[in-house]
Image (cartoon, rainbow, N blue to C red; front, side, top):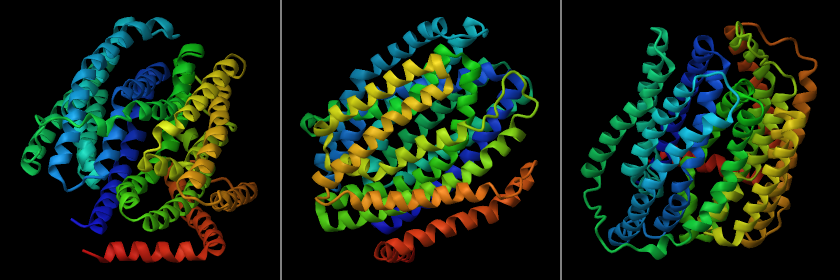
Length: 499
């Protein structure tokens, strides 16, 4: 399958998956809130985020493996040697993964502020975690190979189907009045189904895989350095809810989780584009540096423009949506005019550096930049812990913003100097144009009429509003960078025409 077809398959399956996931992700928390209350919703959300931390056991070797596989795609002998080394790493750390879950189940209930029974918390943690362990042992390594080959659509389709099964079962169980513990068992059972399918798929289409060959440990030697970067990424993405659950309680965590959930819907739409094209960036870096730079420019220009446009739309609709969504929930106030802009600031600062982050990854500059990631982690934790007792939810968000301001600028400057060999002004110009449009939209919003008090009215209002916002950003980006806009149009047209 050629690059164009892989890109198209990744993009189309990704969009479909995210639309379905977004719909279900909005429906299920609403049912949890209505049936179990804000504390249970906060518990489930925080547990989900903490398992992202425990997955750090996999993160380092995962990125290192993909980066190593980019160089040898098509050479089954070398691919097997890298996969064998990765497989042994998974086996060694799998026991640690299970132990981490058990420790989490014992310690976490003792440090959070909640009225939920201890047994309930422990069982929710265990049922969520056991599914993760199953995935870790049996399928994680195979998804790395698919990612390196550009076949993200295989994993995306599988995740979409299993996600539908899990959420529909969850909705049904909540509807008939099942206990929250029984509801959480669904995650573990779905993981078993997913494991069986992955085992069949690999045997059917990758019969050449042989994990008994002599492992090439040198190929994934940078896994420890990659791990540092993953820790930094996960800290600014996930620390907030953990700190809030410990210092402010699960109800405040529930407020954070809803804003984060709604904005993540927009972020995941952008992720579809990233996952569709990342393999192309990785392979071109080692084969054709000029092509890599062209693809990098397309990636960055498009990603920055669309990010700012999407979050401009999100900013206008998030509070009206939450007023409808949380109607009838009275155990804590979910409407706060300051929170949307703070959440959007963290999202945009992270997106500004997305292209730079991908360039550092595919170039393998993990060790050279690890201490910068450590600095980011220290800033985030220090500011969050200092401010959380004074400003609550605002404090942890400001901690994330402080860390992002440092690291995002650092990554942009590093990539320009050490990978692209050019001035960082090109990136800052793109960022400046998008920011100017964002501020203009904020100004215009003051003069617009209220945007609806029902889901239908919000949808009807959002269509012309989004069209207007994207038109503004598209015109501004095109006028300030016509060659890149023309290249992007040619690029997409060619990819969708080729078979």
